[in-house]
Image 1 (cartoon, rainbow over the protein chains, first blue to last red):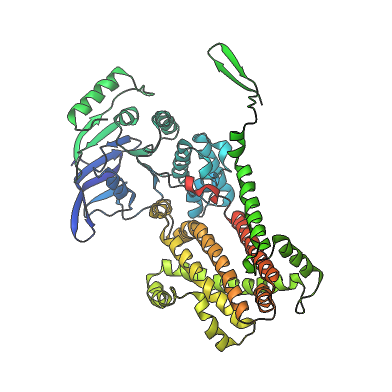
Image 2: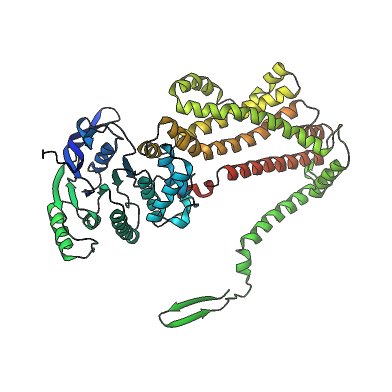
Length: 257
Length: 282
């Protein structure tokens, strides 16, 4: 293990997790994963479907407990979910019965922030994601990209130390997806947080990540390789250095997109 | 309406496109087909009645309308028409309210607490498959022929769908929605208040709608057995005195009353769940 350095935000040490399927079929999902994430780093966990990357994220969120190993956030162990880690879900998971504004202010509401104050917070982040004029809409009136903006604003409104994004653009069409990547880079630039972003899309990973952790393509998931993406921002999807790196990553995996 | 489309530098103006009224366009017009459907229904009814194809027990449609008009002009068995309609509606409101006030919370509670579920479910499953009409005779033995026995039948009939739908409404909530509340820092109580209840509202209302239509079946059955007022009583009296117009008129009234109560419930639902209209797009 690397020695503890002061700007390590999240440390995962030797995490393994096995799911028991119906009956007693044991499915090892991730094995012996160790990972450090620095403060305000944009870390992308890249891997094909079914490689345990979402489970890793859920363990960091505290929604699952690892069988072995531990997760520490600012050197204190993670024992369950908490508002210090915001999460954005692949299928948006907005509350259909709440307006956009109520969805975004839910986090502060649950923490007992007074109404005026939490409204103000919610509006601030709705503005950040560009949805100020939609606060009275219900989720079903929004497009997929807009729904996920609400999801991002909702996670931000709780002012988490860490943002966990679980294939957030997996359900969007290619155009919207690209646009949301640009938006994500902009939002992150404006509101720096430590981000762990899970995706199966190489271009997304290269466009957004400071560092890419590539996971092996089959269970149990292990970290296959790590890449430092030292490219200036804002990036360009067709930048030559970026494309060279893309070729390298493709070469090194069975991941073909 | 003028539609303008610009293709490169060229501007194409599609004027109002008037197709000639063709036979094909007419017979494929849905409103035309709706009218044909209804009109042929009444014409066939009228012809069947006129030529006594079903004996003299089927009367022509306008006689049914006339009968209904007459009922509004005079008292029948001590009540005017509104009185009979209200008698049935009142029984439904009482029975339906009692049943839903008990069954919906019980269903929610059973879905949330496996011990409560383990205690209530076996007995509930025992009674579930029994048609509510099967209770008519025993309820008259227990409660006599007054209001209590009719309300009892309605409670029995409406209880099951109310409870089942509330129960399933909670069970079918997307589990990841609970994760959202937990990640945002919510407790178990927040999961129930923020997710569980609102997410199950549509299912609860679906159950209430089913219950309401069952309630009309039940009140009719109870009134046919024994009653001195109500729409079922009108039908029964029409049968006993051989007045097909009265029987058919009573049937029409029940359909209208059942439809109206269902519409009112639908209005309440849209008021409480304004977000529900296109939940399938979620």
